[in-house]
Image (cartoon, rainbow, N blue to C red; front, side):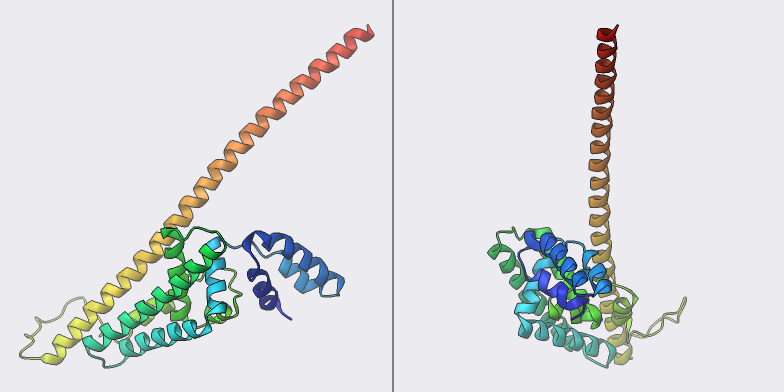
Length: 254
């Protein structure tokens, strides 16, 4: 048994049972002499509901996840090979359809457990499936197990995939020939434009996700500050009351 096994076990439960079961599991592992694994389990953070739903949907729909993975690989293949614009478009549409199916499965999981499949939740779920499928690494492996505890982030490897196959850019270049004079150049230009548009979409999606996370962190910080101020005020009032009570005791003693 490793951390992924325990994580999958925890994520298979209703989300509101995660923390209690995590703590109990850590104690069980420690008692069994697996102190290192127990420490790792105890450090697991309760995932947001959209990540929990993505894991549940992926683990319960292996065929759907394989279809998504194959579609992502086909996108990569068409973008790195000498594919036509029609082939590129068909691969992209197939990938989007597979993503739609994955998001739908996760939304059904949310509804079945009395969670609302909000637009934001579905957007985040889509991003999880998209990035994991494109990266084809640890994130996808853990998603298949239902053990993905952290959301994958679109990194340079994903962006590089979208740039792959594009001709090198130059700061200046001769005036291109017309499509009629050089059909290969026209196809290359069309392909480059498509890759650039897809790369821009990737960056915009990542930027929106990071902005949403930053806004949520700021909101949490504001709430924490308000709670701290309220606690300080309550403590000051209690201290004042304690002093008043002490003076009253002293006065009675006199």
